[in-house]
Length: 304
Image (cartoon, rainbow, N blue to C red; front, side, top):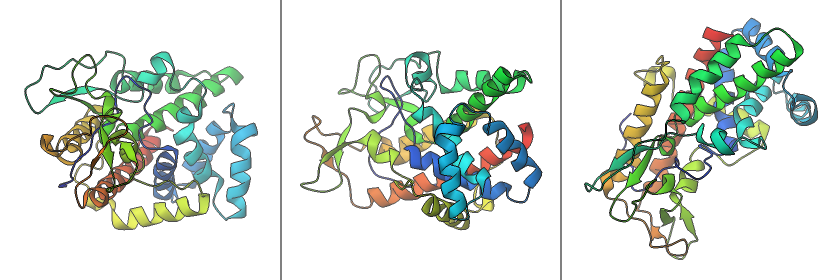
C-alpha cells in the first residue's frame, strides 16, 4: 500500500481518541457485513449475540427499524452500531478504557528523545477483550458480557487500522511525555483563510462523515468495488501487532510525510496542508477502512 501523502499527524495519545469518527467505524462494519452476506448462518449468530447488548432495545432497535425501512438488513445495521459503540459508551474513553483505543508508539524524525508507549494500550487490551468474548458464560449476565466484548473487538480492530492510532510524534517542538498527543496539538488548515483543525480531526474524517444508513450501505459497496480483497497483499493477516505496524508505517510516510509536514504554532494558526494532501488522505483512509472491514469479517468467521 504505497502512498505519497503529505502532511499530517496522528491520533493516538494521552487525550481521548476516536480513531475513525463514528461514521467511519460504521462504514467498516458495513464492509464486513457485505463480505459475510454469503454466510447467513454466521450472521444469525452475530445478530443473536448483539441483541443481548444493553443498548439494543433503547438505542439500536430504532436504527434497525430505520434500516429495515430502507431495505438494509438487521445484521448490517447491528454491525455498524456495534463497531462504533465504544465511542458512544459513557465510559468508553475514561480511565483505562480510554487507552484501549490507541498505542502511542514513539516516532521521531529529528533525533529528539522519545518516551515508550504506555503498557495499557490498544495492543495489550485487545487479547483481553477476545478472552472475555470467548469465556463469557451462557447466562443472562454472560450474554451481556459477550456482546460488550464483541463491540470492543470490532471497534479496536478498526482503531488499529487508523494510522494516527499507532504512533506519537516527538520532535523539537513536541517533547515531554506524549509528543504531539496523536495529532491533537498538531495544527493545520485545509486552505488559506480556513479554520484551523487538529491533524487528529482531519484523519478522523478520512472515510466519511455521513450517519445515513442508506449512504453508508452504498459506501461499503463502493469501497469493496474500489478496494477488492485481491488488492491487499496481507488481507488475511490476523495478528493485531501487524495491523499496528502497517498503520505506523503509513503514519510516518503518508501522514507525517517522513517529517516534512509542519504544524502551526497554536490552535488558532494552522499551516495550510499541501496540495493533494486531503485527496491522498481520503484514498489511504478508505483503503485502511476497507481492509479493516475484510479483517473484521475474517475475525468473525473464525470466532463466532
